[in-house]
Amino acid sequence: MDWNFLTGLGTLILAIATILYVTQSRLQTQALMKQVNLQIGQQIPRLFIRQVNFEANSLKIEIQNAGSTPAYWVGLETRFFVIGQRLYSDQHSDSEINWGEAVKLHEKGKTIFSKYFWAGPTKLSYENKSVDADTSISFLSPQGVSVYFPPNSIVQTETRPMFLVSWKGDQGLPASKGFEYDEFREFLLSNDIRAVAVVMSLICKDAGETVHGQGYVASFVVRTDLDHSLVESSKNSHRFDFIPLSHEEQLSGNSWTRYDDYRNTFSNWHVF
Image (cartoon, rainbow, N blue to C red; front, side, top):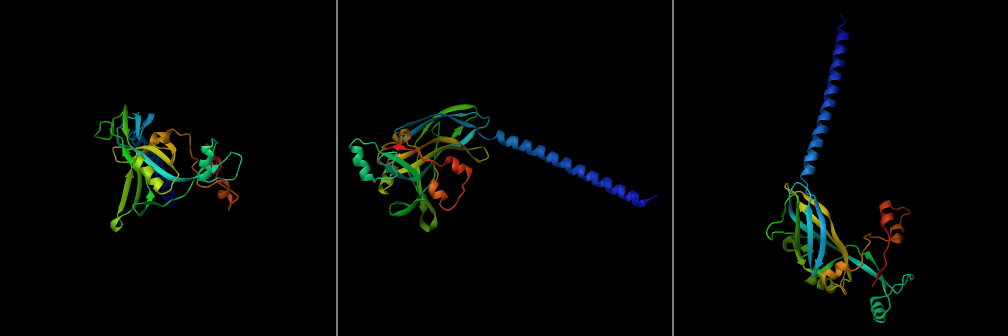
């Protein structure tokens, strides 16, 4: 009897069995992961924004929870970004005009045009402190107490958006101040800010306390000199192309750019 042959055959059989075992284990793991992902997906709330209305400085919203799981701590996420404004006497001129010139021409019945651009991170001042723009969450509370949206439900609710700034307080601890629209506008004017871009989104938590974004609610420009209420800002036709650099600035040091930046980089004209 050839013991070497038997030893080799046994080794080959063991190797084949090991490969089959590893392959089967991998398939079982993949199937298990699919089941886990499916179960996780079923636990994520599915909120749809059916209707949004601004009234004075409040926001009324109708939301449908189309999923089979409840949504907890449903809120309105509000962010703002300081943006610059360039003013022009016509749409064919590259020469900017200043604010005083724009006001005089506007008083004479002339049409003034403007473009917005991102001003970059901007330090602001509040009560002699240097503060930063921050993100706030205003809770949507349909029953006035809880922030719970049952599954397969449609809820009409209301909130007052807050605009937040933050800074390092005593002993380096975080501190913040939330403004409603009127006070926020006065705060911006005190910092000589002419315009900010505002982005509002719907946000919630699931039963496991995981945060889920549920889509944009609104985005618009607050023109501090012209808009005297949140509803005025939300209804003005001014929108911003939120690209931090213009064509010339972006390409000044490079001869290439990303496709998404190329596709999205453009400027809109707005009537002042």
